[in-house]
Length: 246
Figure (cartoon, rainbow, N blue to C red):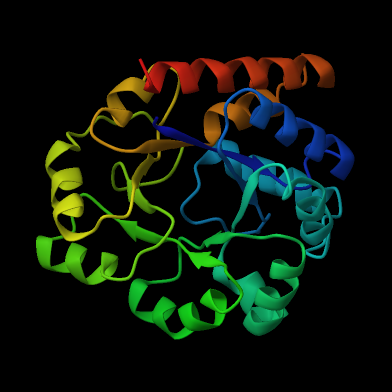
């Protein structure tokens, strides 16, 4: 069965509401959660997720809250953090690994940490059973894919196109997925631009999809009550999980 990874920005809602939403998504078919760490310069994120980060920061979000949220969900859903390297570096990478492991963190997705630099930290995280997720782009050569994925674990994040999250560009991923699978047995999940409408196509040759902006658009819809937003996100979770496994 193909997997669904969902993304929710921490700090947009109260922590208890964030936990309730994530658990509701898990009940409706989400396999893993990317808990977004708000950052003031989210270079890989489109306007929707950037807006969510700005709202969280204006709400007074502090990094240590990520531990409390994780503690409340990690026993029920596979939990990863998605964030930019600066906050992790400022808090101390070793400290992040130790404290993250203590609350059940299973992986980190750091889009601005190049593969060559991530190697220096992988052993430290591996020692705490936390995986640094590797990224592959459609522009990567076979040689670079082999280099990046040589020691990949958990899943490989295939960026569906060059650019930022939240757009719906179309790109033929069959060849790039084939090249990844020739180099690695680690599952390949496609992210960037995955919506209810594009999920089936993006999942066609991969092992799963990563959905962020489609959920955050609903989360930020102030015309709906919080309960309605949660229900709508849960329905979308269920729909996408069904679509990718048709």
